[in-house]
Image (cartoon, rainbow, N blue to C red; front, top):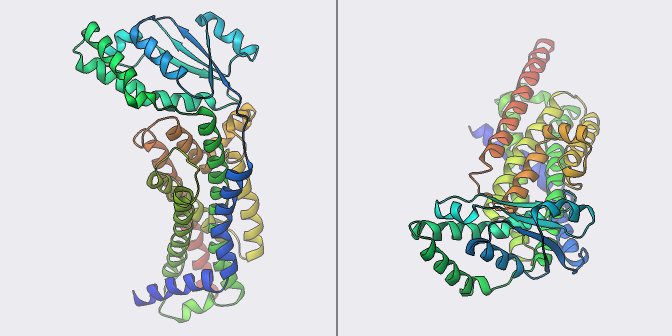
Length: 382
């Protein structure tokens, strides 16, 4: 194992100490992008127009209407449900809250139903409205539960909830919209750097081949699997450090909020890094020269992040491109973050997390198979 540790140290030294400027740039550039985005990117402070169709006409639906009306930057338009689509078409509203008959009864039966938030796919304002309403709806459901199904007790509790200091604190939807967009730009760039940096570190193997260092492995106690595994672990350590630096910088050195807990964000990005490192190893396994691996990885990684919606929302893609984009690990990473912004929990996106981990495992397994065949051929020739 001493040889294995020595290989890890050597990989870290080559990746960091031999290219300190490159390592520093790859670490701080996403942070610089975040700072620039938070300072320069801004959105109009005009009102977000929300249509409300209340078909329940209950104390609970009235409370939800008050909650939405209490948001800063919101202009409410009351309408019937059959008028919602026409108002979207005329651009009178940007989002709509439809409350159907039976909403309050559902809360009394410990269920959140008969409420729908609608919006234009080109604008994600409605997703922020969903995120804000989620906690309030959970609180209303809890009130229905503790009221024991008694409508009078429930309505009195709802009145007290609306009058509470928790509700009085206003939330600016414009500020939240700006922060989420700025932070998503930052995350998109960070994912881009994760893929490109992982491929660059993995390409050290091809560089060693060209310098005949790779061949010397067979004359030392080191095994080929040790060499490859040390490169993968070194890659993960460096990328994890850069992700941690970026996430902590966003949390403590800027006023930008992504609406996701730092630990959860780190986990999603680290799972993305697992896929990126596996892909970097795959690029190396199918090439023999550093330039060839670099050219293939640059093209493939750029395609992955574009299809992943890192810079353009996937909702804007044509249907065929949208369908193809599901093969991009970046799409699942960005999708997980957007889901969390809308109020979903870590448990709700567990499927995405397992999928990213599965992608990494499959790609790495394919790389191992290709590499094993190559090494057998190399040994027979040597």
